[in-house]
Image (cartoon, rainbow over all chains, first blue to last red; front, side, top):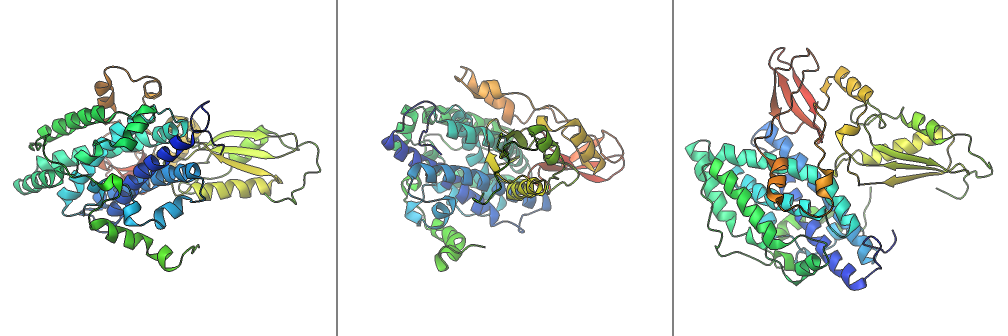
Length: 265
Length: 193
């Protein structure tokens, strides 16, 4: 790989460092949700759901590898995708807090998925126009997968919300409990703003308006009440301040490489 | 490739068309009745005058676990035909689409009991690149709409189009599960992608 991150633009070390950090956010979001979904392998509430959860997890894991591989190349410190996944501690992970939340009941799992999928779709769609050609190519590759994920989780929200009284109550409760984790996806810090300024990433306010409109439309169809858009929101995951849940997720995934560093098979 | 490769031959004894033909005999590891060429995974083949061969491949899905097996199978096949210097390149863009699947590949799928993709994938590539159009919300809704018409999937066993979706995902990311409402057989459907 030559050290040229945009078409015809000379290598800019500061921008490369920021892009590296941004790629970690993209990769960490995909990896942590992939791990959460993988925990349900063989435990899905129905065979079809079990297959869907693990297939979505597989798509997200593939996307993780693409983001991490590019991140490792940009960093230029010899870290590959495995080093980034297995040899970073919780405070070095940059995923949003939403994605490390426990699987809970199936309404919790699907509301978390729906909140993420909606954001992910509009984000990835925006990234297909990134000034960074490699990011645009990865986004183009991911977009069809991400669209399919969102169509599915939207369907499930409607079926659960507009289902029985029991499923409705659980889905409404999950929608409210997870709502405070949704704001972080749109809360742009200096790094996100630098990505927008370099035309690498799409604008946060625009993403948020798309997200709210889609969640509102699906919730209406699902007979669910959308919590207030101006509610207080959690933050910190993107800066490495996580809930206690992340440590357990990482402990499970990283055990082998921590116990036997560099082990291969 | 190692340094002991035989490079003494000044001209290659094969050309790109020959390599395409060889690759046409390399089966997809998940669906062995279809070749990697019929599936549209092989995007380009270049043969240099010195006889080194470059093969460009693209993954079907980002997380396709078969890519390493496919890469090994390509290397093995070309080695078997005497190609010494092989370079494999992974290309993401343009993203793989089931539109690249050949007619013979689709027929082979059907014969194997898998319904092939039912329609051409809508070309949204022109909208994805370049400046975002003003009404981007409506454009977005086309791809994620719940009211999009369902594809007309034909049962590979009895030919009936009276079929229903059972599960949006099947045994691999590229497939969904359907059932035939006439002959009552379940079957895999290779999703439009």
